[in-house]
Image (cartoon, rainbow, N blue to C red; front, side, top):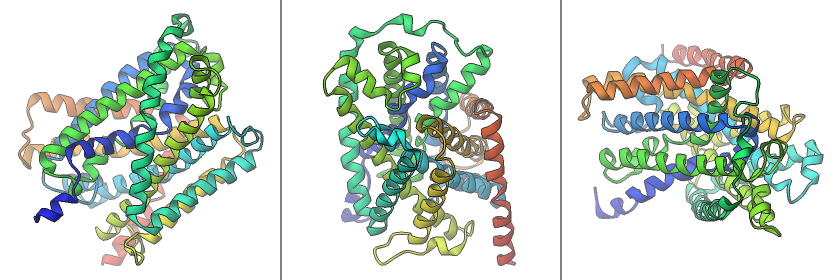
Length: 433
């Protein structure tokens, strides 16, 4: 590799920032509202979620030490279990991307609604605004990957420091009574915890991004593992800390009906224009995340198409090197999700889409944990010790537990979306014969 090529790769700090930036987005700004109905159970859910996320982070860190795979996380499954399993993981992961994009568009509008109340009053206008944001960033990605990277860098830098300052200043307003009763849902503790944990996992989506971008990272065998683990740990600590602190500062009953819960927290801590500042930061953060996931909307199906797991049109690039067909297709599907669900409240729509996206991500997570058990036993410098086997089994069990926590309706729709890929796979296989 030439010296100039090395300069184009991501350093360890950059790779770590990629993980953190992909994980800290809308969740940190809207989860206080979606988790508020679970009261003190949410703190227990965060403990399980942070632990499970670290198990998954270790899974991807160790997978990075197996045979080099540049096509994305689904390729590990294909390498371990064959093309059909790889296709199911690829299809599920692709679905999770454009559903995540639609949820992030709604999250951005939700925060803008605290500045422009008409967005909360008119669901048609809210949906239209979400669509406008989505297609603006699709246009940015169509222009060039470098343009998308510039937008991502600016939004990541601006969103984290104010949140940390807000929470540290807000500790003087923290009230433990806000966590009573501990389980206000009326559901059994295990069921309430698993459902809240499934919601919390939304904020952990993106922990696999350094692994997916291993080909762009300096010394990937060393740096991808470190970036994945430390990025996940830091993102989990910041997100869980912000959500728990928010519930301690503002009563859960008030948070649960808020379209911009962190803005309400800022109003308590800073007063005056605090809520407006946080609302803008929330919108900016979610906006930046849309940009990153729109980028994946193009990159993932393009890689799938090159591996024969998606129609060949998805591999096509425009004059600037952007996968135009894949980008537009993903944004069309994300737009459909926004339009068909626009009759719900902003928080209700976000909650449903967040759970559906989380479920679609859990399928690849589960398969990757099982693939790691197989690949580490036969492939690569990372040996499968008893301790690592326990961690990988724990990651798989955590993924299955989170699938259960997503609820029957979400699992039902997620299963149908997964099955929708079967005709595509059959068609692709027919084309090979």
